[in-house]
Length: 194
Picture 1 (spheres, rainbow, N blue to C red):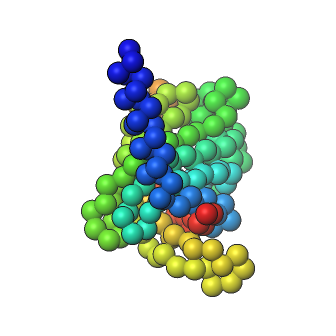
Picture 2 (cartoon, helix red, strand yellow; picture 1 turned 60 degrees about the vertical axis):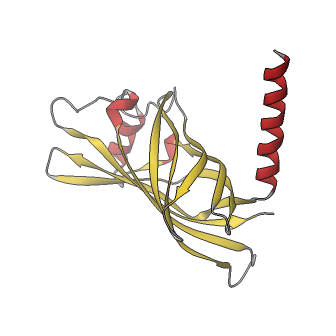
Picture 3 (cartoon, rainbow, N blue to C red; picture 1 turned 180 degrees about the vertical axis):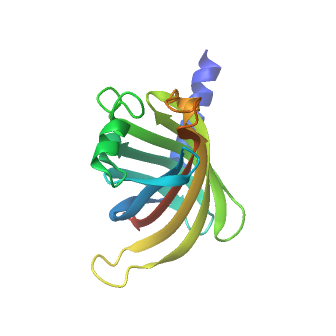
């Protein structure tokens, strides 16, 4: 038992030390878009966005080390550009926002595939169900913002594909009314806070 506690203490100290070398970034919610498309009866894909979210992560630009990614989305902020459809998507057939008001994503690291590309793997929770998901990430730009806050800003584009049935959201899947595959896109500017 002592060995386990000692090992845990050392690991925690090392993780804290590594994180101390990374800067904290917050998503600039005014310049962050989380949107998705989903097939409608096979005719075309319908677009939806989430308008209320927050998130942060730790990152070292030089080493490309990533840590402690957390993003929270207000599920009720869904907007599919049709009020009646939005009401349906918020009910128990889809997001059931009265029971599950938040969608969350957490990750503790990523893998660089080059200077500007890589992946981030983490846990996505929808309807209280957590599943692993991998985001393909492109780092568009790192620079001081040209006016206003003048903080260092990372510009990021991310994509992922999930099956909504993996989260227990099966309405319209069997009869082909609504696709199972959801294509997710995220465009964000993240501000350095430290």
